[in-house]
Image (cartoon, rainbow, N blue to C red; front, side):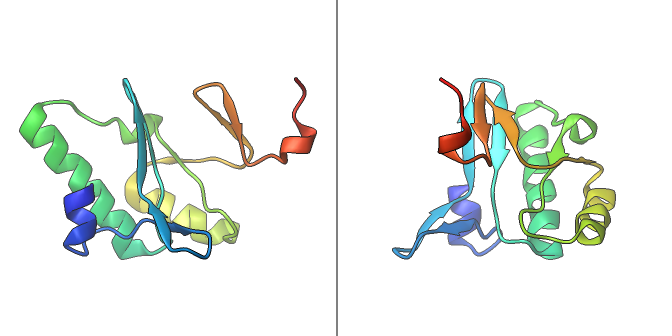
Length: 109
């Protein structure tokens, strides 16, 4: 992913004013990808995942994957979900038992 970003093939999500860019989080057999909302960017991500499969033999099941369009209209999310084969999901969601997309003040301890 880092090489793909350096070569301009994938653009991660810019976080904050200091320009921090996040593209992925990996944990054991789970992955979360973040990036600019753009058809080409998402198509390139699918290509990168296919290359991952070709090199390592570990296939990504896009049918079990979810696509989130933060701040995007539902028709935009639906269109890109059709391209990728992913399911459409909404915020908040749970990633590694952590709630993503909720206000910290609303989380029960």
